Image (cartoon, rainbow, N blue to C red; front, top):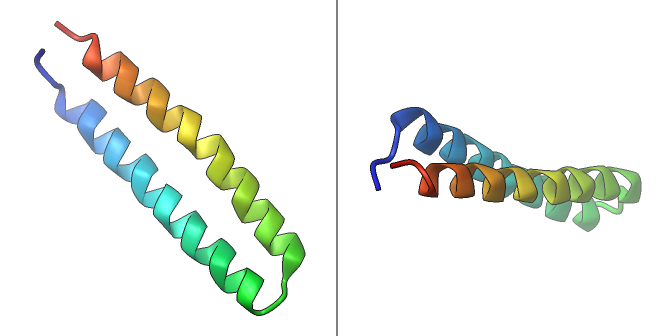
Length: 62
């Protein structure tokens, strides 16, 4: 199971964007900007399967 640096870096970037979207959604909810909360929540929901796909692709590299 050898990992490529590109896959690890991509996974780190996607997971970092996940954290940023979560923080922005919480901040927008605090200030009652509900449309923005929905946008960030959808973005967060789209980023998670991307991270899972990158992880599975990197896990299967031999």
